[in-house]
Image (cartoon, rainbow over all chains, first blue to last red; front, side, top):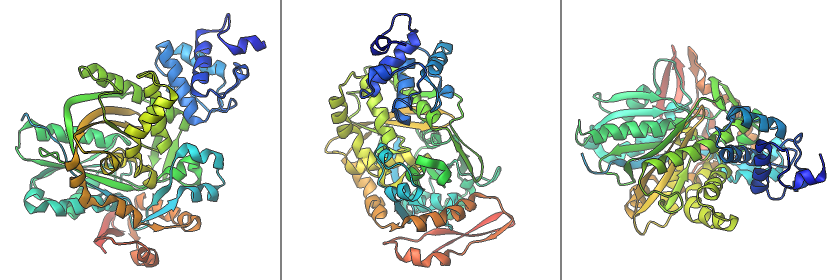
Length: 89
Length: 412
């Protein structure tokens, strides 16, 4: 993944990952955009348990899907969360 | 019946002891950087002679005594709401009914729906009172729980309290006049928190927080869909929410103000201070008391908000598993006057302060009160030194033992 892919919406990035990226930056503005990688977990980005819940619920709202409450875990990486959101469609 | 119904009287019992949340953090070696997320000062601690029944009775008895015999005889429904049940068949309500001295023409029920059960019971009671099938009838809804949190509970332990809240429901709603028909609900199955056994509590923190936030948004949206011209930012002068820890209620408020009201961070902070913070004073000093937590928050709001004129309150109830409801009602200066006899602030200040060692030594014996046993003896006199450290208190119902599975109680 290039530096450029992490700063903003990325060409070819799934809608779910793009939503997660936006929600991470909205909920925890202190996260450097370039640290947001699909293989990183929210905990690794410094998000506490409240932040993690808020990001998932917000992303589900953006995508107009049911929140995949049962799939969230502290060590879930962004790819896994994106897959959960996709399956909720 | 066309008039308003609601809560006529409210009383809180929040235990006899407390431990500072920071003491629990230090004692368990929890990361002090995470203390700020909880936003808790103290948590109430129960004692080995307390169980679900004593908590319920110690919350409801002062209220029942205050209303007098004539009103007591009009209590036609008693619901005890708990996730700390004592028997698969015999309900906690049967013991509570006996020790409150209620009449024999009274429906008894124990309700279980995690922390949401009290709101479900309140709505059932309102329906009965408002139906007019028994004009002037009263209902008593009591939320009572015993905590199981220990070192295994991690960051939930410093935020877990003990206690009970009693609500007298009728057609003279001096504490809270509930807006008839104004509610939104949201429920689905998830395994976020559960008690599979009397001494076993399992919790998935991430799942529970996500379910709470999801339910908050969707129950509010359902309310806004059902109630004409309602707006989350402007319809409610104040808010009270289920508060497992103060930081959770704050996060829920932040989310709704950002998504439904489009407020900036600064605007959200101002709104938090104005509309939600008054409800968090008592929860921040008691901790999560499960089924009674929302109504402890309501009591805090009534004692700390500006009630110089009538105010509309939005209330959010959440129970793991999960089910939720957002509803509303009116409070005013009369609400504070009606709540004054409960002396909640004084009651909280009178609790004995424990250090971590004293608190930790009580946990195992406390949780044992929920275990079914054929025979068991409890000697409240063993705790006289601790009781001497409690400030003013009234008569207290205590568990003295179990004889052939039948729980025995006495007043001290």
